[in-house]
Length: 327
Image (cartoon, rainbow, N blue to C red; front, side):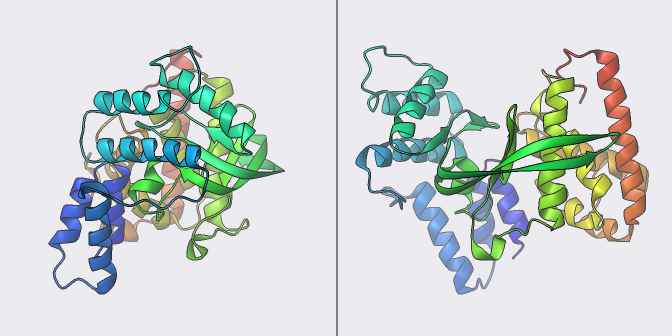
């Protein structure tokens, strides 16, 4: 079984297709039989059982409200209906006479309560769905990061002791999760996970796929403050390719992630990137079979990535600082 294909469905917000793929595998090992059962129970069972990393009854109710929301949107229910239910569930947990149906306002109130309980709470959207990150411990370190045509000084906040990591973690039973993100004050890094997935700070996965990727976001926030996430992700992934010494590692990831849907900024940026690289490598404006990419020289990929990055940067400058994007 191809796990990259399985989790690509999840990253695209489609656990129904993920389960169908699991069911289609003949002669499954015990591991994948158990995984199929887990998906079926969590997302399609009548009474799914959740594990909570806290005994606090109020926190467990908040987490349950989000779990039910995740289940709805990941199985194809209307996002608007799922958010309405989420508002109703969360509003009952806020002892506040100032009732509101604005999720941003509700999450600001949740943030205050979580801080009183000793946790950090970051709400909002991990495109295209809502879902907070809730953790206890934060440590920080400063880095100077080389980027195309500049260097960027950044502060990285290393986070650990999570009790929630938004919808991607939920959709993949912790196998995939947002490694980090960029905010105006610095970069945030999820410094925990399964032992087999722990990342060394001197590895390309940290230095390139995290540090350069997120530092590029921070740089772009300053230069193009209104830029849409799909353009931000496209640029950051090109930066990864510029500095990656083994480009197939990234191409494989982008290949499986790619989806022609602008609502999903990560998959769509991978789709645009792979389409444009396919045109350069094979003369066909269509993503080619993954095996073909093994024969493409890494240095050539790096050159193409730099050229695409420079072209995109020029388009943004021509469009002006207030541009929302050009892809």
